[in-house]
Image 1 (spheres, rainbow, N blue to C red):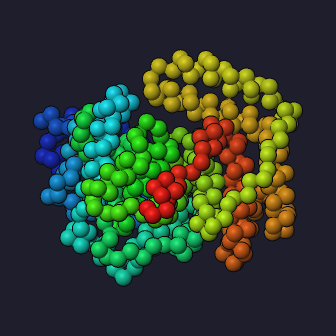
Image 2 (tube, rainbow, N blue to C red):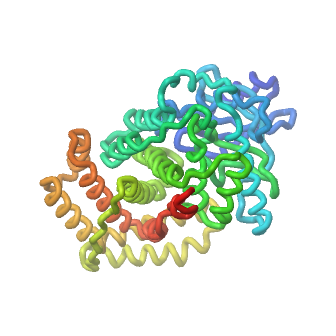
Image 3 (cartoon, rainbow, N blue to C red):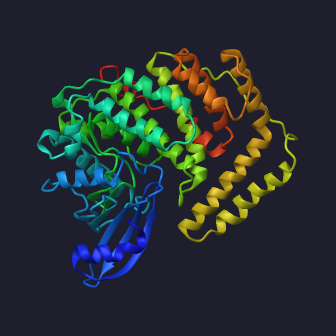
Length: 453
């Protein structure tokens, strides 16, 4: 459905004339609109972006509609589905009260909201998937649901990416090899994207769970891994993680399994980087590409590190960047660009959107300075790795293709994972802010909770 058709469709679905439409989000594959009617109703419409990165994949609005229909009658706060387009390209909801912002809350109120959110996720996990009408799950009968989820995302990558991503191919293969085989009684309905901004609250309690497009049936530790990544690795001020995990365990009666949670943390990173790379490959509109570019290398580095950890090995990072201050013509101007953006543009940005845009410009400026200073060192190390491990000379148009052929041709995975991990680590240093955030040690839940967890 095109946005200019939205008013007529809403009027037909509700019997009320539309008096206002405001776009409130343009995501990777969905546009979200706030719609008001002559009766004073506030509705939310989600529309497919036809050329979006995940368009034409199983990660669709039709699949999201399925879970909302299945959850009708359940005591779980979520937007009420009013209508769906016949072709599955649009969903219409009643607007839920509340906000997704947390920054304005006192520490006590924020902790109360987060505790309530984890309780609501626990309530979701207490539902029995066999008692819900989920046609797509029946279509996967007889398949390990963990493998089915990996298949769904690899198919999305294959369909929507425009270049090879050899590390991601290695990751899908390794995660299938290490995939748990849960008993049917251990399976739950997973939200699939648990974390800040994916729920609304009124300052004390959660009023709605949002963004169900990644839902699936699997082990509950998958959702816990999303919480760890989104609320504790990418954010701060989201409470004490061990206490939160134990709270969830007490409410669900499900024992924590640190090793399985660590497995799903890798799967979370993999799905997240798939979204980022297909957005880049398809030149997604309305998103901050500076974030996507830096997060691709952050997650690639972390995935390589974690894949090796699953095999009992560590990523070899015996390399230090060498600065070459005179490596690039115009580097002095690049340095002043970064300084001017940081000192002049960012402080004067009045609105949150203006501050975000100024921050993106600063990210690019810092990146260009880092490329000027570190780029030659990074390229030399890449060349040495390629020659030493697989006998390749650098060819910017063919490296990823050659590496992908080696992945698919059975070259030793450990060697390739080491090479690709080091390559990602070096490129991550060209995005200074992202590199600084990634420098903290990984959260290993098996270690955090003790070997018995």
